[in-house]
Image (cartoon, rainbow, N blue to C red; front, side, top):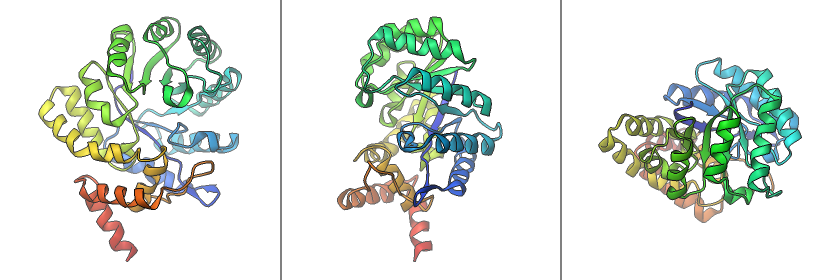
Length: 302
């Protein structure tokens, strides 16, 4: 069972190529700041825009740079069961701790199709699985009852829940919580999800405020609600600002403002609008967990 703060890693670019140096620095920095694991090649990593070779290169770089310090959960899910099996097999060969499998998008499979998809991957590759439910992107919602059947028939160690519904998350925890972890897929809902039985978060915010997000999750899991609430209040505006436009456009813009890497995104994503850049910059300046880094980056640029 996975527990704690897992970073949904961005994929830094320099022009048209992957910025391997920046990715390595991000891995080292987030681990040093106390995160519990890394999740490359997910939505935040712009995986739909990576070639097969680039996808494998990112996974390889992150696993090698991490060197066993924390678990690495590689995103391998696609809307093709065959391709998902092939990528999960590669992730296992590379040394991934687990594979994250998103519910197939565009196909809009039935609940039975979702179940068979995950079981087929599990039957083909001996690797723990994290199932990712994000109906806003895929067009299909994983029902808690289907999740229960998955956990009974496949080595599912966690479900990343991004339905945005606390009611559904509560039902999910009741259905699978004694068998696998439920992880928040929405930074702003991390504290409430832990309160109803979740075990952590796969976090976008942790790309730019890893220490604070890790501290929030740690406090919540330990039952220190006063500390967890304080951190939630401090990080909440930032979590909201990182979704002013489609993820990962705002978080990559924020990473650039903080001097972590370029903010370049690949088409069909477009750069953050100027109005939202100003809103994001103001949020970073007001957040106690990013203000100093922003000021330092501005000073270095000057």
